[in-house]
Length: 142
Image (tube, one colour):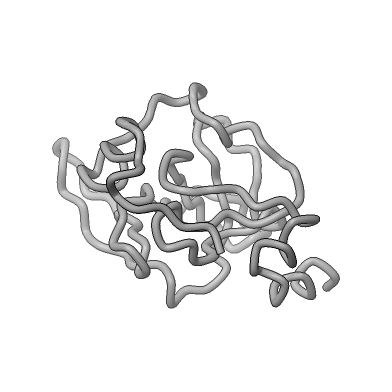
């Protein structure tokens, strides 16, 4: 399982996950990444999203129509910057991940989890078993 300690986070990862920051749009690792696999919480290593639920939203950040396991996601009201939004945090590490909006693809449920690349780590499908995520392989065969 992939895990990091807070001390191992780079400046952007720390800003996003621990200080509720946001990385720049279109200048982050996964905004335009569509390889088959899963996205895990960078600190706890818990699986959060899959490539099966990722879609192109043109917002500049990775977007997902749903989480892999709702028990791993915490949603909170965020009233910062004069807006009311729904913040998304990781249950496993209490890291800020991003926000969820109701402007996603209707055919996929209408949600758009807008997630900072700095808060997640991609695990390719062909590495799932090797890295301790083999239990998720059947999810891709559905």
